[in-house]
Length: 436
Image 1 (cartoon, rainbow, N blue to C red):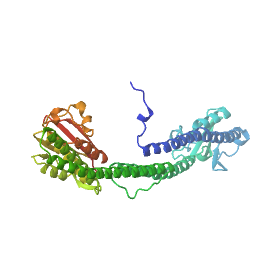
Image 2: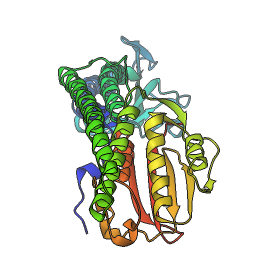
Image 3: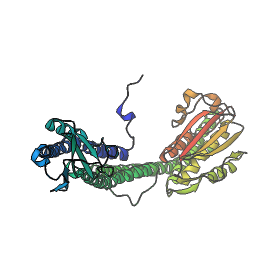
Image 4: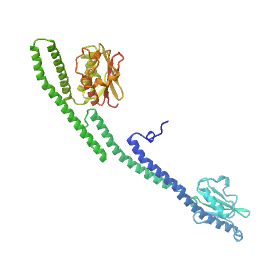
């Protein structure tokens, strides 16, 4: 059984984790303060109040036991602080059955009264919890003390907790507001990195947030500028070299055309044709990179356009519209490479379009010889020509799959190969779609 880890029970998102870091100490401190306040402070205050009431009750009982006092008129006497007492509880007093005998902090008061008076004492609380009744035996009768409940117990202790909770909520609200600002900067940085990875621009992106987040944003912008400059230099160099090589290549073709035909001359012409085809692909790639800005386009329309111009029947199944954001010319060239490869090595091909919630896929199937699974990655290497069955009588430079995967990964997607339901090879172009 795997050992439990803390990250398995904690939130995975940065916002949720940060909020948990803020709330846990606040809740812990609030709980400890509440426990200490009620178990120590409130209990001690109630104990002191019980001692004061016990002293008064002892004096009142002593007075009730005084024979000279008993000779007087036994009527109910009002003392200060809303307290009444009588030495002769008559039948018109509140019956014990109508008084609550179990209530908060009653044990401390009963303990103090029993220990000080030394006789059984009845303590009851009125149903409306406004008055406290204390009854004790006096000769053959009973005396009674009626006092306001707030003299016996600390009844407004909850106000402290209300203030603590109020200030805690205020602190949490301020912390959440501050946290929103910090997390928003990180989310904008994440969106910018995702957009840059898919070949898109975020013109309104600016470094913001904490110093560390700003440093990460500046590093991302610097990396993006360097990669863009590198890609532009590579494309310019590729286009320049390809263009410059066409002139000597043309002269070589003319020279070979004027020579007498022989096996060596034909072999040289074939090599020159391969070189010319390679240069054409280089130039097509360079031209496609120039002026191809990212925008929203219909992937399904591009796939059907490529299938219609493939030179052979290529059925297309799937939705009529799939919207993605990217460079349409580059994606069209990638789809063209996949379809042309399928027709180059097989008799039949078909295309399946799948529109998922987060990804769009274009699956190109053929009934050709296919490629062994262990050689799928080798097929993406530049100038790679695989087994004779796949390459027999098939012109090409071995750059089709390489350039197609390069385009897919530049858009945040990929290309993978697998066994086709038609018996040959299935090439799946996967591109991210916009959230719906």
